[in-house]
Length: 160
Image (cartoon, rainbow, N blue to C red):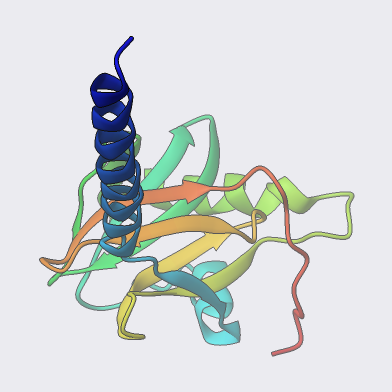
């Protein structure tokens, strides 16, 4: 192989490798992570079957074994086929809350309420589950593209 070909390959590698790194880092920076914040009032609202205003409600899992219930504010959109919309005025809504409330029966982890925060710290909705951790990704246009319970249960301070 000629010296010219080797130098050309090195030059291409020197240009392509940093370009790939920049593209990957750029893609990572466009992800907008939200978070769950424990909230005693949200916990009480679910335990009392209180329907919070201006929320659209969804559950994740099956209706016989839901793992989480979320209420999403009207100016946000839950863009996921894994969540099922539920009418909060229905008897099924109360049954779902009772089933989620039973998740922690016999263990030290009881279901808890959380406020869903968008990346800028604004309230995007509420969450009720014994699962205390979730991946929350909210786009700039208000679409919640990921609201996934994480398999690890994080035991939080339930006295707040």
